Length: 174
Image 1 (cartoon, rainbow, N blue to C red):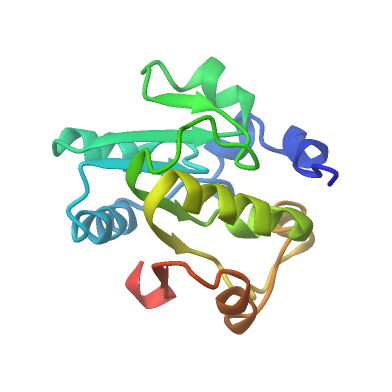
Image 2 (cartoon, rainbow, N blue to C red):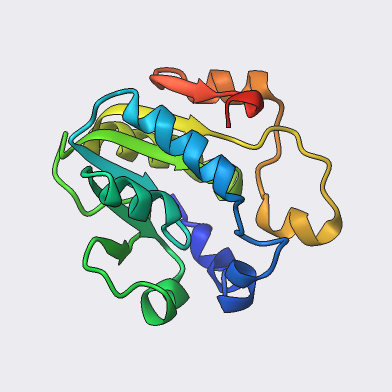
């Protein structure tokens, strides 16, 4: 299967992560997501598509062994100084089976080309004992946003696609 993620990788540059239309997430939302993760009492967490790593850093500050991966090379070069972050392809996670108590992603799957979602989800289930995710569903996007949200589907589609997920969060939860 062709990995189309590489064809969109160039979109995720420094400006994307620093602009308000990019990956800036408000602190209250980070806290809500962190509280949801903590409700599972995990000792180890992997945040797939972690971006700047705010959730990972907060979890670590609260005593949880958290790690983050993203495929944007610029993060490794400019933002991540800590060893618990790495550049990796979610189609082939570089971890052994069941390495993490919980694998988390937020605002991630909609950035994955549709033909790669099954593989990425399978990889998340392989490395994690529990998988929790939030997907931005059927958002009204302008042309700029559509470049990044390459799989924009209704919630029912995601529920079917991610069958077997331990928890698919709803917008009002995050």
